Length: 412
Image 1 (cartoon, rainbow, N blue to C red):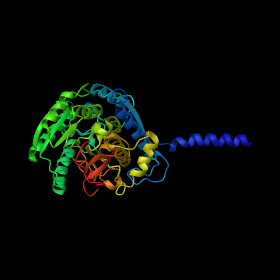
Image 2: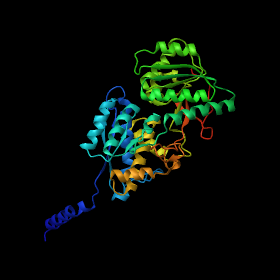
Image 3: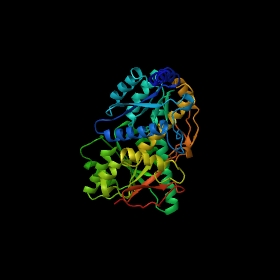
Image 4: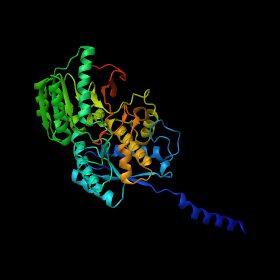
């Protein structure tokens, strides 16, 4: 046989054998705002998922986190995770339509998303109807997991858990430093997120014996918040508790500054306040602002996976991980782990694997106790932190055992 004949025979043999070993991709849909006002958030999420896919599928040195060894899904013959992105434009009805398209046309086995709770509400209705898992990566409205859904799972803490941590922080910081918060002003947009957040905070404030000096609801993406800034100044609470997305978080800080009001403390319900766009848009006005957070970039000692994952994300998107993007990477890793443990990649088996999830916090990049879902699909081991902006960067100030610096009680 000629050399060409040998090569041709080998090629035919390779083609005839390789399909028997090739595992099909496991396709997941991701619904985010990729255009419109919230596009920067959606595009950051897209970058986070791309990094997570590279970690799960790629060949690299092991990263000390769930699904961090690379090489794909070993229990599914090395199958790779594939993400198909869909643009919600931050519109709940558009999100609903895109979720249905991903299921019926792209044949995804699960959907992950979706930044705002209002879009999560409609997406999860679709996934429930079609009986595929919805992984809520960064939606925090408590009501999402109170609807009796079988296919809804949420890795992130919800606003009840976040708000409870905020008020626990007030109490413990008051005992430690003597700086006691006695009154709060609630400031929230008129969305599902803002309304649920303020309701929880009002309840917790009353239970803690704090005065609610103001409860201000405003229309999201308002062109002006001057009247609201005046109302906050008149209330002059010990702490302002805003629940706002990025453009509004910048605008309220500028509006308070324009009328010469320097609040005693601002402790935000994350969202826009945890974005790089807030730090750059508010500039020096962000100094001293506090926010609850799911993530602590400075917790590298207890979470060794943070450094390599952040380096990968920064190389991919030219910025560090934040509260949102860290939750995105974690949610996809948890979902991929369940898909792998399912042994089949079928939606019902994935759901059963998610129900059985029990991941130690040390095996993630998050400062959580771990990931374990209750009967509503809520992760009960998500333990938030409180951070404060100093020098233009968020630093962890609570819980005290993971804090890297003490609280500074002033907003410049």
